[in-house]
Length: 470
Ligand SMILES: Nc1ncnc2c1ncn2[C@@H]1O[C@H](COP(=O)(O)OP(=O)(O)OP(=O)(O)O)[C@@H](O)[C@H]1O
Ligand SMILES: [Mg+2]
Image 1 (cartoon, rainbow, N blue to C red):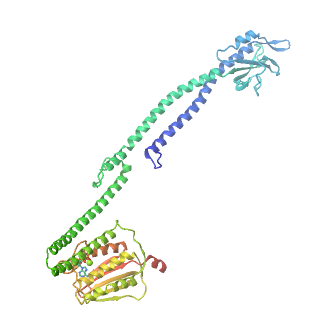
Image 2 (image 1 turned 45 degrees about the vertical axis):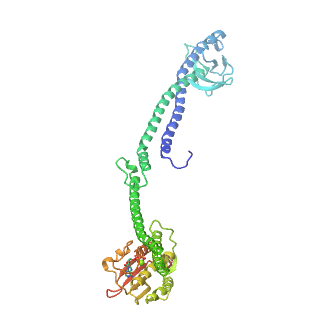
Image 3 (image 1 turned 90 degrees about the vertical axis):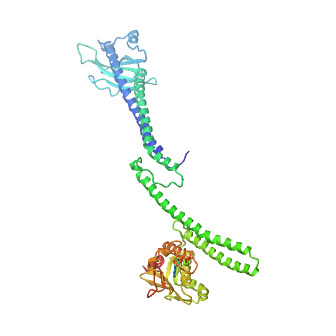
């Protein structure tokens, strides 16, 4: 009720019915005007006739024209069922011969011989129709004329007008009512496919993402329905990805949780405290692994396109940032006797980045390099610029990822066969999601001579830097 949203049906009905009602009003006004013209036309002739009869009672006397009309004769002449009548007679010299004194002479009444004139006038506070006519009263001398005016109240004229308008209006009303019914029906009928479409969508379960049947959709609504179908397709793809991820994640979690349970059971049944201790140490390692998996799953979900929490882009000095993170890895590298080095340009190099996500990206790449290269190996983090891009590369001298695996390692849960080190197979998937969020691209190659690996991330120049340079 009273909502302000646009309502198609209401707008159509209002747009079509309002002109019809306006038409009815206009039609009535025109009908009234025409009917009153018709009524005047019908009764004016009678009025003129009475004026002629009055003129028959004017005679030429010794001192000019004279009116011989007794009150009884006058009464007989002016009798009417509906209206009151009055007359007045003037000579051509302007002398009044008789009649109702309150009746004004019509001005200008023209010269003798002029055609009869009709007009409205006020008589004793009532509107009357008046005819003024110059009429001959002497057959021997038709040039001798008197001005006769006859007035009549409007009762029968008004009644005729009303009757004509009423009959016109009755016909009009029937026509307009029929038009309204036709309009309402046409609007309802026209909008039916749209409503059917709405019902078809409303009936669906959230799982039914099949395309809408476009066969009965009107041409005008087809673009909308096609957009809905395109959206369904996108939703279906997204849902597929989501479902696959949930299935994979559940599968990946099941094994370590089952392992943990088995280890705990074993430890519980162990009487020797030294062995219990040993089991607990193993349990700790398993729990750590599980915790890493859960963290990686969360990072993956966080950086998923579409399901992303707001990306908080800000200008970040890539060189300083990468150096800081590399230093945090020093103890870990030391434990494996890995020579962790850093090469920079020695000057600030800004990129637009979300610091938390950028940290995840760099951490995952260094983690892989440290984890998968040999003990006593070499890992280098390098920041450089080329062609306006800021380039971050992490290289190691461990076993190369075979060229045919270099795309697949970015897939979720994909790990190389035969690796000894632990991992959940999610790190590089997270890295590629984060790179995409930053508009960056990643390349992988061997470091040199077919050994080692180099992961390179090409960041577009910072907007601020690009603007400052322009
Ligand atoms: N620097 C590297 N050297 C050799 N192999 C690598 C290197 N980086 C990645 N790989 C291979 O690619 C696989 C996928 O790496 P990714 O980081 O996605 O997962 P993970 O390291 O196994 O698990 P996670 O990082 O989620 O703990 C690894 O299991 C490893 O086989
Ligand atoms: Mg990894």
